[in-house]
Image 1: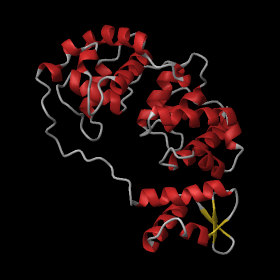
Image 2: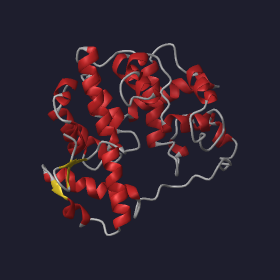
Image 3: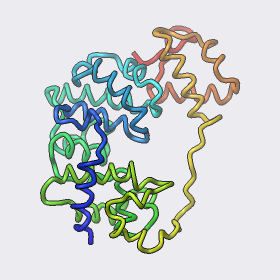
Image 4: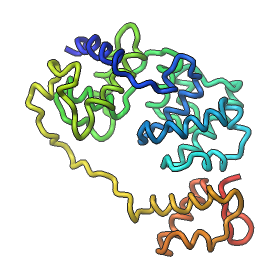
Length: 288
């Protein structure tokens, strides 16, 4: 049944694909790499303005590599998970020092870059260079879990069985187009909480729908809380450092979070993660 998914999903994508700048024919491998890292755990609507500003400011790896890492963190804005900004900066410097300023064109060489995991290496190799790889993001894994395996949700972590299934479904031609089409179907139609089965091009083939949409039976899936967490505290502190364009006295950081124990823990974590540094006596800044 798997190969029967190809034509209807590709036909659906041809009509319904969003016009995203990193998907356009002129998008550089660097533009695609930046988009893939920004899109991790972050919706397209939030990524678009930040990605656009980044590409205007740093259109090549060399232009970002020439800046201190703190500038990457500053212009990351409120995308969340700011370690990704440091990873991108480290990637830019590795691309300049080890690859002549050009993004590597193979999965194995991409995988060697700082902070680049299996998914990102496969995605960039596929979308930037036309390679044939199983690109397994959350959306793709959910579509395959439902259509082929008859399960509401995929396992929490990617399994060997999922990878084998995805690889078995790669078409001989247009593997990158297939990868992005399945990804788009998961993002727009086969969504996590409210799948629109009536609009799905493979509803008649979907094992999960044909089985009566059985409920997920795995470990409980909990949404991530944010209010009052260390993540929120870190975000508040980082916002002060981003806006300051210079050293920030400790008192200014103390003012944005009331709990002193949590605040100190979060601040220590930012320093340990390389997102902030101590400058002078009792002052902090973004990494220089």
